[in-house]
Image (cartoon, one colour):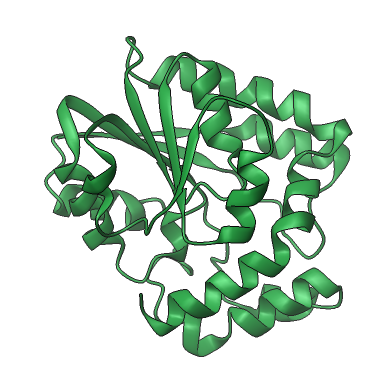
Length: 236
């Protein structure tokens, strides 16, 4: 594991509890869940099978996909995050694992999925090529992400007054962000180009504007801007 990943793991270990609390706020949790379920039912393969959630964090997506009938495994390098993921109830299996290497030790999968992971990777092309290797025939890669900082890291610096956001700015320092090709992505093409280069035969992009509308109603996490997520689905 490289030094950048070690540094980021420290951040997410420290932030696990507060991150989970924000993701599961009562006024937001059920409404957001309904949005994701609606989109995932439309985009995931019709017949549930084996799913791998890479960079699962506190297990939000793994539990959601499992509830849709998938036999789900979630992996992450942050032990703090995984402890919370496992405590959310029975269903998915959770294991320590790097999102970009040696995923084949967990088996092969009909679906490789993640949420807000691609932008944090130092080599997203390597990651997608690796996920492609562990797909079963007719398998699909589905990622949820966004254009988090299209105007640069000034957004982070401006908002880094709270404990959580201050830590974010320290750990996601300019020297770290320079090693994350998608951190400052300005268009969704920056993401889809990765999948095309990795050999995807079909790549679709689905915006999720309802998340923005929800954010306008109830607010977003401290220090965060309101951004519209998108779902990219790739067949190989």
